[in-house]
Image: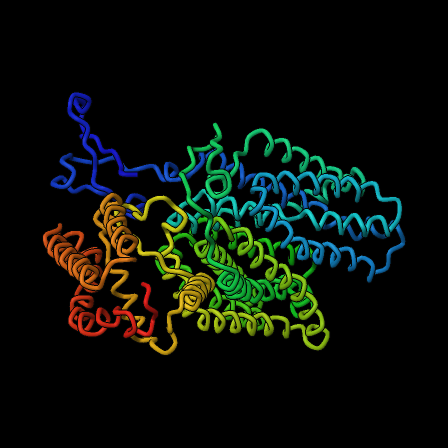
Length: 614
């Protein structure tokens, strides 16, 4: 990731290799670095973005293909299912139950699949989901009764979590700088399958009403074999769960100390924040999709062919937006700005659909689809960037679960509203877009706080406290702070310190007991820590005079450390490492006089109130 650059020209192989200075991935991807004075060459080569993936690029393409084929297999059976149910003398209500049972089963299985994905791996859940989908499809195609068909739909819905697992896998292997692009590609593959699937299913129905279901089962079996033979496990998940088990298909895992997540409270907050956004966007989408045909037929007297053509235009605009427009907007505005822009476009487009003439409705329909594409990619990317390997599947699947609930609720709400006025479903879509916009604005402080917390937890669980040459001070979650505070309080109570009566004095005492330690290197940090610990352990039974002498030695060492930091590289000072350390040392220096006059005197037996033995 340092980037290797070679001098241009035919004689470059005779010159020594030049190594560039460390650069961020953002600079490598989006900037053409050509400063001759910095690199000593005429024209450096740009780094292939695929080199930043933690797996081979073919694995990422395979995941996108798996998502497309799985969604295609599900969509080809959609148009024939009502006619297939009629063979069992099913009523219209029972036909609706087939679709509702699948949706509710899918929504209910997502927590189970997310737990399995975090515990057993992304590849294992993909294998289970593809195999379960295959069994469910063959079961539907051979169902002897309506009840058997209904149970098979429930079974199939339980294993229809391939898309969510593919999303988690991509977040694992794609760096943050590329997530916006790949989330858009994933959404495009899903929409493309929905675009072509019903037509393929209608053509296969000429071979029999069960033919699309059998084809769906065969496609799922093929995906099972492909995943088993060619898809490697996510290196991010392997590092977190199997640090000592290298695989020939993945890079050697980094040594870890312990797996530390963001905590249950923060994880739930992320799920709710992004889940509500997904819910509002999906309700708007389903309100438009489910009732546009009814609105077009009633208002403009369009037949099914013209309605299908119009909806195809919307789907094509959505696919094009996901491929070419969404990644650019995400890079320019960020996840929050792109999501807000998407809600604005949904509101404008939904409002235009309910207007006349027909041209205005079509333009509004396409604009709403573009807003849905931008919003969906932004929300998915934002949720992905708020995860770590311990909660990634939980957050991604939890937000997707609320999105599925929106897919169930949207048609129900729009159908009831259309019974009164066919324009009301689009008013509802605009209203939910406004609700999503307001939810986004309200959640901005929470998202900012979590991002700052994650910035200080990049090295948590690793053996090194440095990230790209920069020291990272660890910051705890509410649960971790509460756990440590409870431990310290119990410790002080059990060792007879009157920490409530002398609370402020004890805080000053603890501040002196934990002076700043060196962040120059891991070795210097460890050496300083060991020396502090040695002073404390060896001074337990020391008399007051010798303890005071040891304490003054520590203060002298702190002053020497301050002097050394003043002489360090100015670049490090600009990064804030030395500045932050000096700030803490200055605070310590200001309290030295107060410490000598109060805290050290209070160490004397019988005077401190903390107990005679220190």
